[in-house]
Image 1 (cartoon, rainbow, N blue to C red):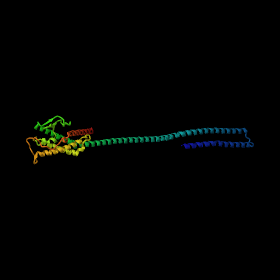
Image 2: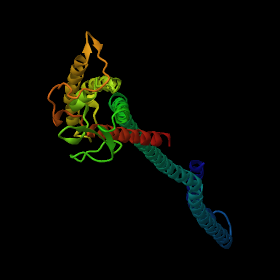
Image 3: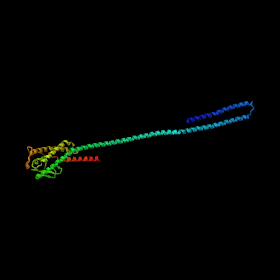
Image 4: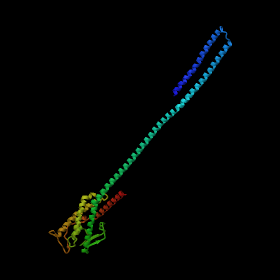
Length: 351
């Protein structure tokens, strides 16, 4: 559209510029005509004034045409200026559209980059949250596994060592006290149960001490391993108690020998006490066999109506072979500690 308009404008300028040339040519021809007229004036009788008037008219016509040409040029210049202005106006929408497109592209790129960056940041944040959750879950699972392993170990300690020993030692002590009561009833002048502590400061579980009256020694703390010959087979009917105590001791020995490794690390003295008990029971089992042999004939126990005044001596045993009184206390302490730990673990697990 703009190219066609410019073409027409240039054509009009050319045409207008050619118009003065044509007028000039006509003026020349007119001048030639005047000369011819002047030449013919000699032969033709024509007034000179009329000829001058005609020339003057022609000159005025040329002046008018020149004025019109100047006016046309002014109009053409104005139209050219207007065409330039119109061209800028026509270019305006295109420029606006182009600028809008470029701005749109930049805005789109910026928005896309921002969206991509936000998406990447969001994905990174989600990945970090997932990693943190996985780490916490792994730590929690690890702690749970460790806690479960610890509890499993404690339950093994409870079921294989502390629980059985606590039950057997409790049973043995109950039989021992029953035998004490039977002896006190059978011979109260020779046996008594008093509330006291032994010379080493170690008390029994019930804070009582069973004593025997020995000739020349007075009241002495009764020890099965040391004084068995004074009661076994001596018409006091306590053999069944001693037989059961020895049988229980044999089971205690088996547990210690097989399960001592389950002892709690907090009870460093327990292994030494185990060793003392094993030594004690080895002597007591031998004493028991001797007592049974001395009080039987052909494998049948000899029944006596009265105790011997001088019981036949068994092995010469001293206090180094007596039952370690701290063993039940250590076993009870470990049993209760493990039970508390298991209950605490159970409470935390269920909460």
